[in-house]
Image 1 (cartoon, rainbow, N blue to C red):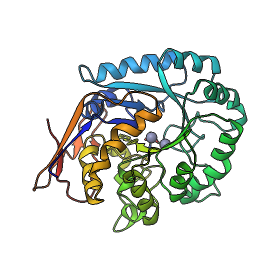
Image 2: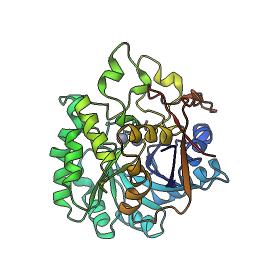
Image 3: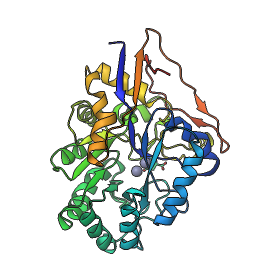
Image 4: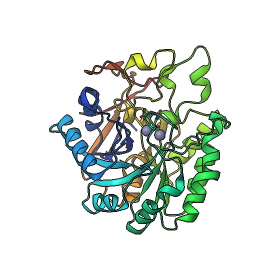
Length: 345
Ligand SMILES: NC(=O)N[C@@H](CC(=O)O)C(=O)O
Ligand SMILES: [Zn+2]
Ligand SMILES: [Zn+2]
């Protein structure tokens, strides 16, 4: 197959930042994606409906003219007001609430420490059907970083779900076989997003032959067996798994330094990379389900009416190595193998 046409894709987990970074990188997503779920981990975070409305306007300014709808999220804190969440959902302003365990990842200092303190918000969300998106890692210093997702499922996520019947949950950027198995067994109220880079990277890619700061993200890539489980989940056609790129721009200098930031920037070339990965797996016919259908179904929005066509050429494609922004250059994810697909313009 040399050409494939999909309903326009959605990115169900995207970081667009703010200010000069937002202005520089938002077009990279708006070019190929019709909608994206915009993460609220700004500094300070997007906590209230009013803050989400203002941020949505800034995102719309940044993509000026593009056919792109930002779906906003609220950052869950121990002080979040359930009534404000319910209002923002009823107004169609927010599509989800995001749970960051305090200290788990980039800009998560305002996250949740005591899960009992967010019980009322979670109960309201269960009543109105508003999904909770979860960064699923414990932050306990004793727990090994490669085990943090699996331990989170057992000690945090499963208890929350049992205590809050009807709560709809998305386990974001799953990185382990345990995550895949938990989502698969979780029934219609549970889904999992999978990133582009976690379909490609295992932990060797980060560490063997020299440290690769642009392959460092959280949750960190795991052993090859876990990557294979993620690949089987993404390409297997099961409706509980869909694309959330977690494209997370950081200025080059803040990744290439002695304490580099976590995040891979994949917005620019995600769809060509995914076409290559699905083709290699012999499942190109399931790419559209992963990029454009399953997520829409979980979030109860129609599949996009526009289309996007990918075409294959014998020669490898080249993509920009960096995106220039007013906040510094952002290095574009390099999968480490040739990509023969490009988006037809
Ligand atoms: N994934 C990352 O490594 N980083 C994300 C935060 C996140 O999604 O956890 C970021 O905001 O940079
Ligand atoms: Zn995260
Ligand atoms: Zn993220």
